[in-house]
Image (cartoon, helix red, strand yellow):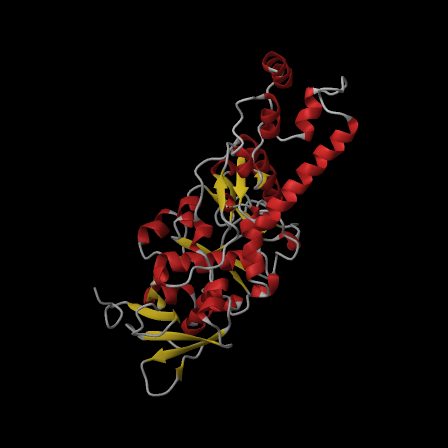
Length: 406
């Protein structure tokens, strides 16, 4: 089925990678009404979208035309217009894809394990000290919770890779020393109704001023009243909720478009949500909601793929990490070997064995039916993401079991 020759009525096309007529071009099909509602300077907003998605500065031109017809920041856009983003620096397809926002960041996981819940409590506590009870509207705290910008399910390796792939984007604001997916700068406090809309890319959050847009480029927010002086809108920045979905039911059921976030009046400004992460997420949500041709482009760079090994563990296939993991394990064995093994050292305890050896190694020592092929999986790097509290008497039961089978 061939692509249409022009956008449908009420929409524009913005080509990000490739040009009109190319079958593998990546472009956005955006409702013109959403552009007008998102920024007072439509041409400038298209530059921001391009920057958020590709992390590259550039200009917007209208197509087709015999000459390069640049679009000014204040320009109103033509209905059914076709626009092209031109990077300020020549980039190969591989270079563009490496920095492109990845739609995987919006994917969530439905539930968390016990130890993850403890980490999320710490994450939420740090955010509650900084944010208003609800970022965008006044509701009781029982109707709010802490939300991640980059989904918690992606994990710390993901967010570190994301940051490294976009060095210099938004001047690395809020990420220079960020090293954990549960850092409060990767989150904010939102009402429970906001969470599913945020995850579904119905809306996104824009921080101004940023590399492209100023605070006054965004329509003013409605005045929000506060019960006391403990919460307020900051005067130096705006964190603005913007709807990407045209369905008016979302806005009528929640809060108006361009509502601004509030913080505790005495909050630490250095711990505000990261502009880099919010705008990466904005770009990813724009691709989810408006993107065309994404499946035909080179995928963005991602961290080493992880597969589930056992409950509570993730095994990665990074050869360097595998080698380091194996060296560390061998070192522990050699160190304990100099002190004597469990067969000739009466002081050796079950706790010492489990502290020195991985459970798979223990199983190998005591079980004649151990499958050596398991070693191949074990020699991969194992990053423990969830380690539930051992039940009382667990190590004693292990000792009894070992004495029975050895």
